[in-house]
Length: 285
Image (cartoon, rainbow, N blue to C red; front, side, top):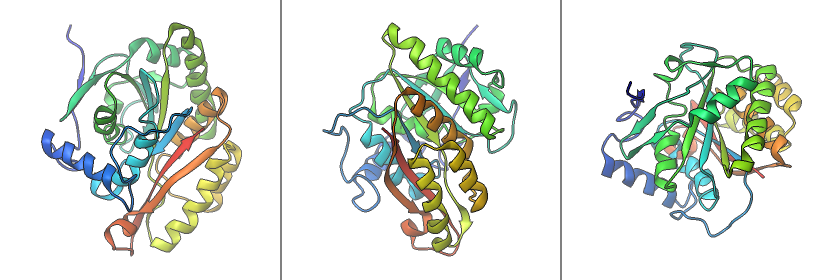
C-alpha cells in the first residue's frame, strides 16, 4: 500500500505554487530588513532553542515575520520537527496527528515520522490518528517551505487542534516532552513549532495593545497566566492552544523563558491599518 500523500491546500494562494518563484519569495522574507532578519540563513549564533511560535498567513503578510524564527533556529541541530497548529475548519478529530505519509510542497516533500507520532499519541488520551483533520488546513502547511528551504534532513510530526482548552495543552504538551526525553537516547533531536496568528480583524492599535499583553504571558511560560490573559483581553489568537502546548513542552524540556524576536501586524506590513491581523516570532530558550 502506498503512503498517504498530503497535497498542499493553499499553494498558489498563500505562497507561490512555482518552485523558483517560491524560493524567491522565501529569500525575500529572509532578506527583508524591516520585518525579517535581513539576511539569509544560516545564523552564526548557536544556542539551545527548544521551540518557536510562527505565524501562518500568506507570505506577503506574515512571511518576513516568520523568517525571523526560522533564521534563529537555522544553526540548530535536529532531525524531527513537531508542528502544532489550530484546526480552522473543524474537520475530523478534535486532537489529531498522522501516523504515516508524505507532505508535498512546491520545493520538495517531507516524511512524517510514524514512530514519534505513535509515541505521542500513546501518551495523550485526547489524541487520535486522523489524516482527514489535516487535509484542508494551512496552519502547518505554510511552515513546510520554510523548513525545506532552511534545513536538509528532517521528518515531521503534525498535530492539529480543534479543542484548544488548557487541559488539552497540558496533556499534549506533556506527551510531547515525555516523548522527546524518551527518544533522546536514540540520538533523535527535536524542534517544536507552534503555528498561530494573533489578534484578528481589529484596528492596528488594538492588535498591538492586546497582543503585547498576551506575548508577555507567553514569555513568562506561565500557562495559567496565558489563558487568563487570553480571556481578559479577548485576544482572537487562532492557535492559542498550539502556543500553550509548545509552551508546556518547552518548559518541561528545560526552557526558562520566551524571547520575542519580532511582532508586526498586516497593517504594519501593507499600510492598511483599519482591520489587521497580528503576527509574532517567539523563541523558547
